[in-house]
Amino acid sequence: MKIPGLFVLAVSSLSSLAAESVFPLYHPKLENSKKGEHHDFPLGVLSATGRLVDGESEILIMDVGGGGPAEKAGLLAGDRVVMAGGRKPEPFSKDTGTGLAGPQTALALALDAASGASPSSLLLEVRRGEKQLPLTVGLPGGRLKPSELLDAIAKHLLATQQKSGRWQPGVGGDADVYMSAFCALSLLAADDRKYLPAIKAAIGFINEKSTSSIDLKDPRGGPKNWQAASSAILLAEYQLATGDDTYAEELAVNCDLMAARVTENGRMGHHFDIPYRGGGLVVINVQAHLAWALAEKCGYKVDQGAWDRSYKEVQASVDRNTGALGYSSRAPRSPDISARTGAMASALVVAGREGEMARRLATALRDHHGRMRHAHAMSSIGLIYGFAGLKGAHPKGHEEVMRKWRPFLELSRNAAGSVSYFGGKRNIGGDQYLGLAPIANAMVALMIASEEGKLHMHGGTRKAWFGK
Image (cartoon, rainbow, N blue to C red):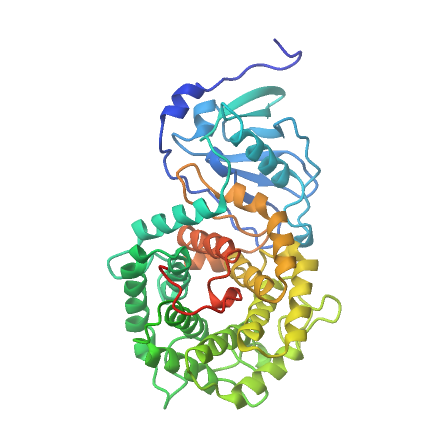
């Protein structure tokens, strides 16, 4: 039947698509928008990149991956997706608090419904120039199953790990240490002994490049606090999961370094010196607290003085309007709350301290979950620590928010089986520094893994659980 005013562009052969077992891995073509003038994001298993602008409800196609479902159906860069699966979305808002509302959720729901149909196909209404036309896209069959996606991510991480034990960062320097720690945590969360050699290789790389440079007699030297914290978190979770205390000394020295860098007023910075005219960065404090709390579970003796001084700074950084943690005690109000708030909630749960404070922080995450992807130019740590804090301190809130964020998983997963990077509405420069492909897989893996709660940062309490 012909629809008046519409032209049939192309209809993919669904039978031929079904015969293909694997589509090419597609990397979205994302342009960083520091002030939120536009928001680029992946279109899930379509293998294409979309762009949204404040107040618009149409998704502008910026790029189409070769050999993917979108290209096979005839979708072109420059097209505008008006409707997906008959759903006309509400306009997009660049306000971080609105989360995934609008065209992103509408597309995700349409993809979910289409993936569960037989045959799996999605009807798009596309605007090309002055014409509107229907476009049927054949999809890889099967609805999203988080546990299967976690397994696929783990296999992808295993296949992309380099011989050195690291994963390829976006730039040089020390980005590979911080990012590789999260990738190794993801393999640990996948809970399969076949990943153990890769986890150990990552730990070996991190210890050689980062931990070995620590000299506690000179805390001005050595790795940044970002690297020391992520290294300690990985080493502690590894020991708790496997019962192997081989790296207990390396765990302790990373924790000791961070304790030595806490100032008398409780502030911490990227390194030894305190930035922003001495104002510091609470996002460093909270990662240190999580590392100390996890290490304590492994037998490490926490420096109580350093903990207390740092915690005082954390307390002073609570935003009275949201109940979440702000940038610092000097600047408690900040829209990007998730990494700071979630990591501290998780730390308090692991340490068994300040239960009421942990609950208040997690409640703030639940109430302002739309901001979950926004954390110091890094969507990754917002999602990783945000969902960790929720799971540990507010399980019902975690379940509620995870349900609301399922569209994020739908648009992140790619046709090849792993995931593509889906960042925030503003600056994603920090994740570009780490490497969008590996950190994307790590942040989605740990977000999914938070549901099972095996890692202690997710509220887990069992020891030696790995591989059993």
